[in-house]
Amino acid sequence: MLLILMLFKMSLEKQLKQIPLVDFQSLLINLMKNIRDWNTKVPELCLAINELSNHPHNLLWLVQLVPNWTSRGRQLRQCLSLVIISKLLDEKREDIPNASNLQISVLHRYLVQMKPSDLLKKMVLKKRAEQPNGTIDDSLHLELEKQAYYLTYILLHLVGEVSCSHSFSSGQRKHFVHLCGALEKHVKCDIREDARLFYRTKVKDLVARIHGKWQEIIQNCRPTQGQLHDFWVPDS
Image (cartoon, rainbow, N blue to C red):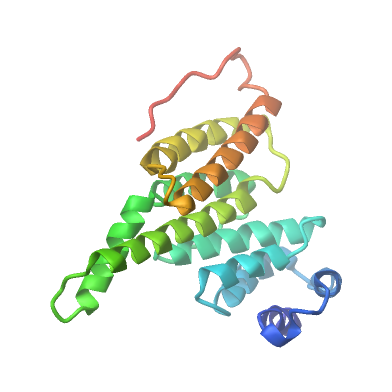
């Protein structure tokens, strides 16, 4: 496991960025194959990788470094994404669910907290506490808004990693119906597009892509036995 952590750490070094990604991933696949008691080691490995950086961009890079064409790679990618989402939202650390249906249900709670305006409020409060006079000017507020939308963008990519990297059963259909509702209500409806603020449009486009993938999953999963249609359930 230490070799895997060393490989992830090396991938963050700027001097090594010219090494082909496929070389890193091939080595990573072989290292993962040799881990015994894989299922029990995954949570420990995720928490260790999570500590390699605090920057959202680097954390997303670490997730995307994991090859998603092997079963162990997909499992690690999903669990690591959940751990990082929790970290970026300043959530209390909890046990990582192994079952994919539990992972998907956890996403709903996280999505509710990804509203760009709420993330911005947290950043503004934190920055005000750092200022001598407790105020921030318009230029700083705009910069914080950009950071909030960038964080939302990274978080949504991680949500996509958890939810769109394996096949799903009909029993998980209801979770995706709820996720679609949460994505619309808490993220999409919070974004006010402006031609001068392209970063908002970029996030909204990502929301549309994720929503489209979830709708495809819903269409490919049959409704619960005995039901012809899904009935709308209000989002809490």
